[in-house]
Length: 253
Image (cartoon, rainbow, N blue to C red; front, side, top):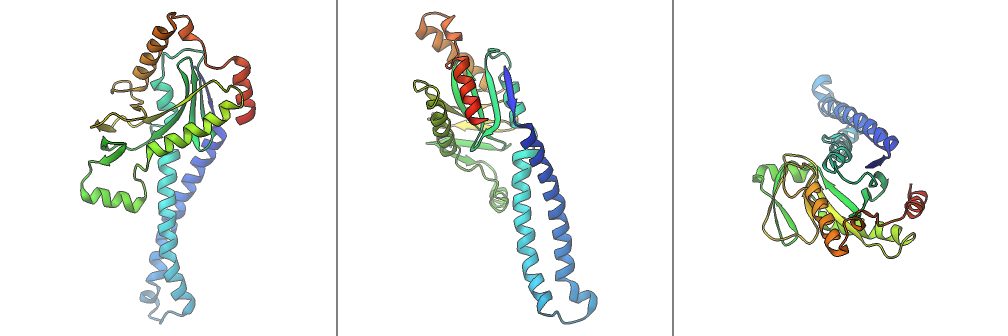
């Protein structure tokens, strides 16, 4: 499998994440000093000091939220692109995985099984899934901290549909007879989903030791293609020709 990753963007955002971490730490220290300045000087705060005291905490809070979000998206391990690549080991060497070139879609896979817009979740929690809604199994206090950090799971099915529509539009420009599908993939091996109802979009683990996982899904998809085509050789054909793939890359990368 050929892997095409926007390494420049990934490196830049990891650097930004590091800068944000230290900026947040510095803002918290500065906030402590500014708010308690009157205790050190025994003087009544002037207007400028009062303004600084009222502004420093909101700034520190915003920096904390952004820093945590950037860390989860760009610095947290396992890295989504690596987890997906490892989860797809054994896939046809004709396959191509694109990472971080098609925002809002972060990962796009073109392989004999089809074209897939992949939405990932880094969360290491336990969830139950019913009627298209994920519910965390964490206790109330953990849920409260999750809300404060703005690191909830969000709406994976909505994101998956947006991703599919976006890539479908790009694919239609080079091949109007190819249907793009979407996948939701949990990349952390500690994540667990209890399926109370069958999801409308496949929800998979990147970890091949868990089930359902990416490798199983692709294997089953290939088997279905082989059965429908009546020929295993045809099941190995790519949905796009080399020329169409090149057009897609030229237009989107």
